[in-house]
Length: 140
Image 1 (cartoon, helix red, strand yellow):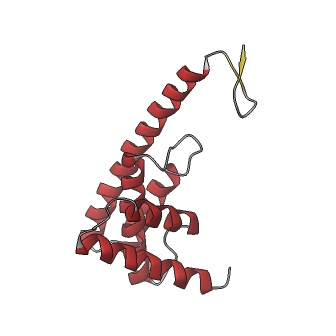
Image 2 (cartoon, rainbow, N blue to C red):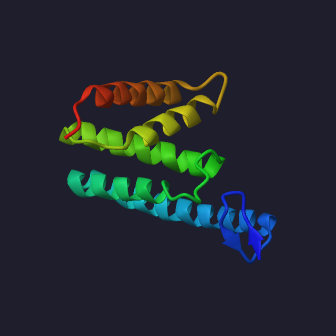
């Protein structure tokens, strides 16, 4: 029996636990990407409320404690879903991604390139504007 860094008891050595967490994180990315594809389809059909719900559910998957949001695949899924949720929520005048999702997505996008393409810059600016707007709104 082994004790992890967090104090949890495990029957597996720490390197194996890291491998298991990495695998779980990748499965979460696949689930989140599936939600994103379905949300895009609903958005294209004009079913914005359902699309937003799916985007939020994909983001919720990426908030699981074993998901490594700073990894490239996880970060890309997070950024894509956050942008989608915020685009749809702005049309519906509803809340989109959480503040943590916004902060992490912006951080991921900013670290992608020293000389980012215009589309990436526009996405960063959009998310920063949405973050500033959501931080000024009172909690309900």
